[in-house]
Length: 473
Image (tube, rainbow, N blue to C red; front, side):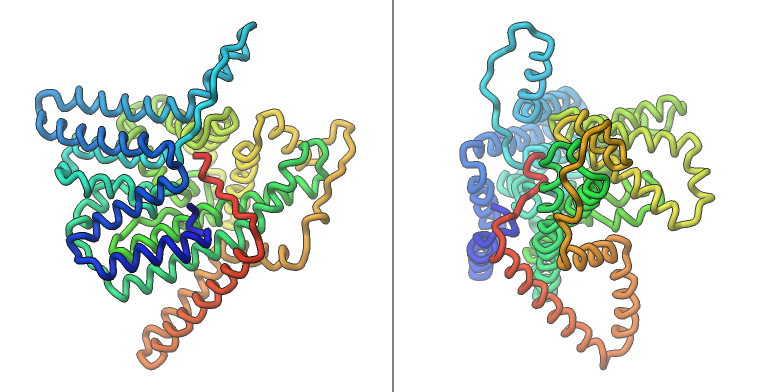
């Protein structure tokens, strides 16, 4: 069940809100837990037992770490990490490993492909963050099974994040406030994310898929550039749109989730990009992998090694394909280069050129992220720069361009480079300082949200094309 589907918007969410509205506060967590399990089972009923097993086993591990603190807690934590990663490894990477082994065997291993449970990368990382933080004594153990189950399964962040650390919300399960002000903010944030996903991401997803689904050597240079520009827009507005919807939904129910994106395409280095892109994932790997490996406390060589390990894992976390590993190592390489001196060169460049450098590097990386095979990615990049190897182009950019695409492209660019945000900040500073005008400002925000919601629903009604990139993760 997607947040951007009619069944969620017009059935699931209203029913949950109604039950919360009529239910006593003491039953709110139970209502949300049941709703979250239904939400998960709706899209992955056969794999729901795996999900429930993950919740149960991590609840037990938390209790055991707390009970045997200072004696066997490290052994228990090690076992928890091994079981969680084994669960993730089996369901997400088993097919990948067998396929790669078969490349070197005369008689391939026959096997039945294993289905990927929805959101397993996210709920595994949620569970791990809980047991590790209990071990580190950053949070108290959660003895209420229903509250821990709600933390891991809470439907707004279940299938696409953000990866909410337990200590960020630990106190909110028992003490949180639902209010009209929070609900109004949450609804507006949800609508904004819905519009980003349905209007912009889906439009450019159609173009990106239309281009990438053709053989790379059939693309013209213009088509190749349009394809990667479209995918660059799609993945940002798709994923950040879902994060906006998750944060908005959580706010409606009284939870405060951390931000997950901060205009990453306006970054002036790859290092800054990773402080702005998928912030919750970057923070998770920093706290649970980079720092335990030694971070930047050791020699420069060890620091560079740690960076490469982290970005190998970052790439592999995204998918069981060599293209994701190459994408992760590619970003790790540029972070390494910036650390050993490239940053000094970049810092002397004008700001627009620094942004252009970062965006160029990111876009080339997205080619590997989107392509099915590494060889196909190299051919695609070659087409971007006019390398044809004698093959004739049969797919051209003009086939995918129309006035609607141009208008949405301009909107996407203005948003991505914080132009709208800069204008908005000036308007806010002007209107909120004058009480007489503040009412008009909030009325205008309400009207804008209503218009966005109308257009988003119109897009949903007119199109059945509604892909979701992060289902594969």
